Length: 276
Image (tube, rainbow, N blue to C red):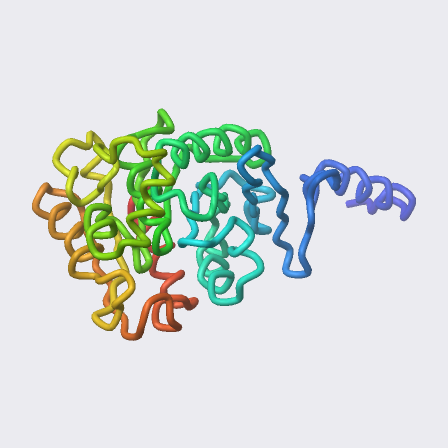
């Protein structure tokens, strides 16, 4: 067998490299981190969301996880706040694109405005990553409300394959009843309008998406968002209705290291993978 001359080999190698998918997204609007993750803002009048694409998802179709932040937080917490960043890094490394939602503001409590915001940024993000049609939601603390409501109310027009909660607030009535300041914050978020249809626990029976698989991370030491009235209560309702439910119990106060770590992120990613 004859061996091509060196000049021919060089040309063949150049052609092969030219045909490979680009190693990074287009530079305009993207930031590529040293670990290979690429991110870009998804602008919105109520605050930009952040789209995070791990290396493997820059050359393959991946599922999307929409992440909702806790009370007082913002979308950038998922890339600038170390415990939050550690948690979501352990998810995206498993082959998930992340859409870090700003939820329409810092204290929006799953309001109609928050859900409308998530729908807008989801639609705006879609051209910027290669999706495989699978969609998941993750709620941190107060973010449990928009995460579950997006799935239960089916507000995106497509099914949510599974949802996960980390110290998730999902009992709106309890939030209002147990704290005057929280109650005032909720009423501001809803503009004084009705809370009906926005309470995952107390309105559970009316949601068309209530059988969405659910993973909830709870702690008996959490007094800020008591698990018995929130994550554990929703898990019991969902299990009784026939949904696939996993409860992960940790130790420590609200959003402590027991909640926010790579092990929890890995378990969430594995739960999502089990529900394609």
